Length: 162
Image (cartoon, rainbow, N blue to C red; front, side):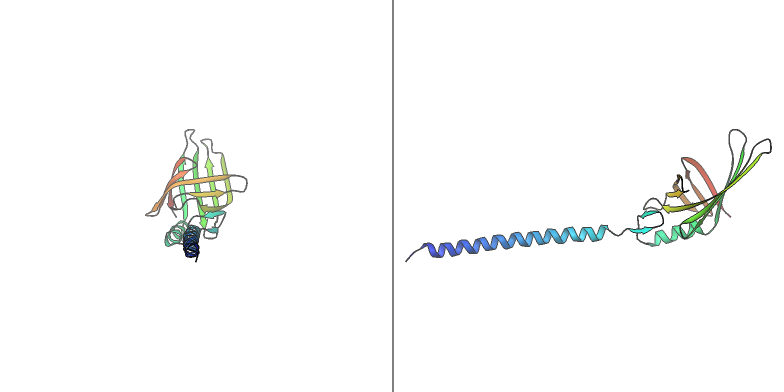
């Protein structure tokens, strides 16, 4: 009678247990990776780029408020040129930017540009404008009380709803 035979069977059993533990561990890793992928891939394509958000109430509330009125601003620059600007946002991620200016000699200029827009961050405090040949950015947006205050291409702007 050979004593090695039962030892060999024990070795096979231990090897089988080790292999099963490895397979089980790999399965848990795969499940964890898949759950992270599905959890973090909730972005949807909206407008001009990737919208960071998934149709949440914040997105709808911010978009509804932004699109609910025409935003106007008036200012005079250091050369005495008067400016009047209207920005109108539409829910389909388009809009119109109207700008009127008049210098101290009475010379007037008007322009109306169509643009596409999208929220540029997940907090809905930045907007990217696409004018076709260039981009413009509205950042640090604070909305409420019929006002939209922001930095428009780095310059402070104070819009009032019309």
